[in-house]
Length: 220
Image 1 (tube, rainbow, N blue to C red):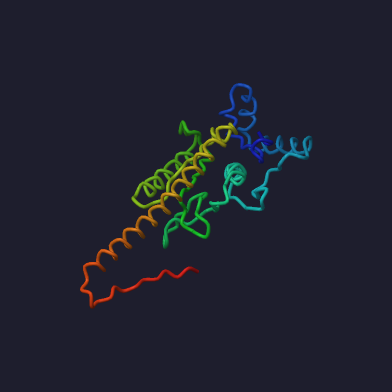
Image 2: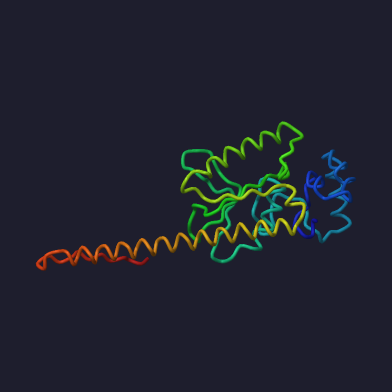
């Protein structure tokens, strides 16, 4: 998993790795034991990625699950998109997303990604802090459901435990962001054509002694 993900897994991921990882799930119940196991892993396999809040590209993340998702995403994002860490969603309000896929030179995301680093997609909670994370997600989902808001994708812990699944959900998110970008560009072109056609029609309707006003678009 460490090799495939580009970062060591977190202990809770072992819940979703099948019977062969049951002993690791039990080991992960003690964070101290899990940390010592990762330290032993690093000693035996020094070429593997180490535990760190910093990703391979130098980006600093808030948590190990965020780093796992970032390491996968950053290798897949095409040149026509930019990947942002913790983009702000609303002015004057402390509301941000984990990651945002944006058009170049744009700060408003086309699509946002929330990393649920405590829970699997079954949403089974074992602690109050996990229930609290679900409440925060529900509040964000309500915000994203309003018209004109970015698209939202949620990546759960069980998806991170299976690298092929994680790559698939990241790929789908990127494709959705690219489609959103193309839709926005087409909308602007269509709007421009409508305005031009309306102006031409108004020009034909004006008396001959009145010259239609000319509009020029300055390109930076």
